[in-house]
Length: 414
Ligand SMILES: Nc1nc2c(ncn2[C@@H]2O[C@H](COP(=O)(O)OP(=O)(O)OP(=O)(O)O)[C@@H](O)[C@H]2O)c(=O)[nH]1
Ligand SMILES: [Mg+2]
Image 1: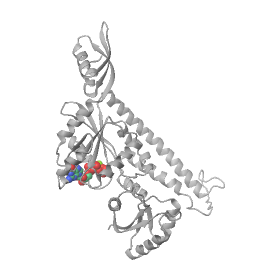
Image 2 (image 1 turned 45 degrees about the vertical axis):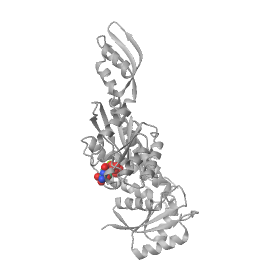
Image 3 (image 1 turned 45 degrees about the horizontal axis):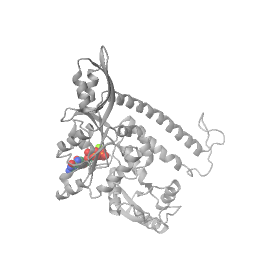
Image 4 (image 1 turned 90 degrees about the horizontal axis):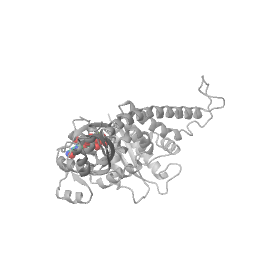
């Protein structure tokens, strides 16, 4: 049976906030992804926010009553709570009380399957817990110490803090090894001049479905939030015969806990090192402009917002009025409207990808056999020749060349 949940939508009267209906919709999706079911939603004013409970006193009393009447087992608030606020509310409601960040961390913990994913989620959870430990042990409860557990005069709280901090350090070190292994792989790919195209977008936008359409990746796709947590890369060949790597990764969301982004650094480096981004947007969601903006905010945090990007307006098969499509598409630069599921307009997407890649160039120094004047001509035609030096045994060429021709020069180089 699904766990019954009451959602409190915290309203700060912030004019830049999302429309309430969209906040409620997303909170329901998050609760569902955690295996729960929202049985009641209440608006909770927090202007000005109460230091003790975030939401105002009257609302705390109202929620307590509703908790009793509905028999819910969990209350979730849509904004982040401080440790003492959470404890205060939990006491008032008499049931498990969590904030949106904990809900997201819980979903990630349920979904993590790789060793790397699990470590990253644990890191985010510990970082969330560490500053919230305070006050749990008000009385200075000294417990009998075993070897290395508790020093003289140390409180239980201090020991817990120290243990968590140590575990955080250990996870960080383990993740560094993962990062190293990824960097080695990336270096190999870069040496071959195979461009990396990273699929990014709001969670549930259809990134994995698109990866499956573009390659034979066989990624799991599902209607729900955060289905994919690990990056997956697959080689493919574009219609112009250029080899590329497409990579699918964890989806983004608005106000993603910063601990989570920080913890998922190793996974998200895939996005940072990409040559081209395909930003997948679900245009069947009427709130898609806000979703796109939230993704742009995360990309900006990752310093990847200025990367060459093709905007992929997905799920057009779900639009009831296809005439709006052209209007939507014209509103964006470098955009294409597709259905990843129905495989519609994939050819148009691929030509935009080819076009974007042809604009990217790499600087290359190669020693070519004397009889490869064809390549010197090609370098003049396709890129920018910086210097050519005709030696006795080979020609040394330095040039800036588009990705898709650079490989030919590498192959011919001695
Ligand atoms: N109708 C329709 N559904 C689609 C399309 N693309 C994806 N979907 C559906 O949307 C849901 C989410 O797709 P995924 O590919 O898992 O989305 P994602 O962006 O990888 O999501 P996360 O990994 O959770 O971030 C699935 O139920 C897909 O079948 C499309 O073009 N049309
Ligand atoms: Mg996915």
